[in-house]
Amino acid sequence: MTWFSQKGFEVRLEWGLPAVEFLAGEADCAVVVDVMSFSTCVSLAVDNGARIYPYPWKDASAQAYGLKIGVNTASVDRRFSGEGYSLSPASIRAIRAGESLILPSPNGSAISFRARDKGIAVFSGCFRNLSATAEACGNYQRILLIPCGERWPDGSLRPSVEDYVAAGGIITALGRENTSPEAQAAAAAYQHYRKQGLALLQECASAVELRQRGFAADVALCLEENAGVHACRLHGDVYTAG
Image (cartoon, one colour):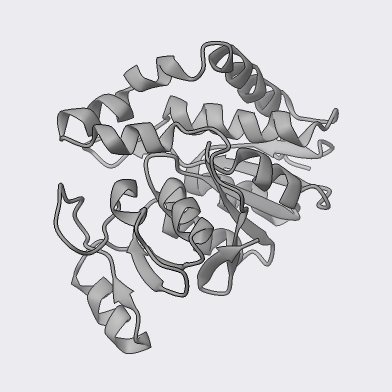
């Protein structure tokens, strides 16, 4: 047992890609939480009956991958309007049942695939599918919550409160008593924000960034609690209803 493993607790929490590298080997399932906006996009698409192929690079290789497997690729840039899809949740709302879409997202996608490669069940969680995700994870003994966070301009991890609070919401919905101190702290943060209807999160750094870029509608979608009905599970290379 290593000092950081949170071994002995059924529900655990740690940040970003290092959580996969150092903790996922001792978990039965992982929940990747990237609220603004990967996990919200996945939830919206899966609720509409679509399939999401995560892709870990936002460059020309995403389009090449789509051509190779015969699947449309979302724009690597968030867009205000126009046809097609992007990492903007508002653009995903109109996706149709049966559609498949490659969604380039260096953060959520990379963490999803790394966790999958550890041989464990992988889910994408957010505020929209908070309860559904907890229900889907209920049969697993050792559950690892992974708030993804964002990136500073130098590439280092910027812990993001929206991911932390959403992870805490899933932990609360799980209702387990044997949770690590890290997981308990996130659950306490969720209880604090929930009392105010998540309204305070509209002023978190990630939400302010999106609004300044013109994506206020995305912020609203990302903060909808339990508006979705499906858990989202990674099966091979694709997220579908869990």
